[in-house]
Image (cartoon, rainbow over all chains, first blue to last red; front, top):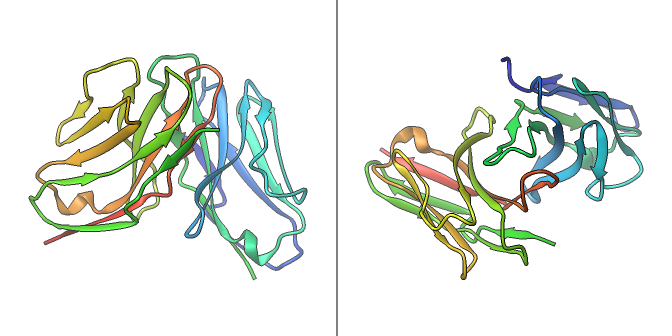
Length: 115
Length: 115
């Protein structure tokens, strides 16, 4: 298995532009997580899906952020419009919940820089 | 809400020494999972070790072991015979139960192994 695949690895965009981050979870996994990592806040959970349904989006910072999971093999995190304070590394992770000793497998992350 | 606290932002030890990273958590749940993840400079998140709360025996994985104190809500990681490759950020994480919940991370401890 190729693991969790995120694209792009790096993204530089201008303030006000729309940014879309993509994630392909591990095949067979039924839960997907989006995290944001910054020096100040560490790893924050933004949203997580179970069986393609958003379960908890309380970590989404504001309405500029939205996430979708149209099917079991694809998810997007969109920021519109982007702001410099959105600069961070964004991780996608997937797992198979309902299995004992489950763990989350992470993608390589997308480093977003908003200038 | 569950919280995870890592009180040591940064630590340094000499190669071959033993080091212990601290983690405390807060929850009203009786059954849950705890994890330690490692994030080397490559940015990849790697699971180091996991512990199920209902198991009294402390988990071990080669040079890595934990000291799980359920009553004290403490979950420390011990690295024996530390190696240069252990240099990384280490995150403690909590998951309420398998099946329907999110994984919450502490802010991390940056560990430097000195030659």
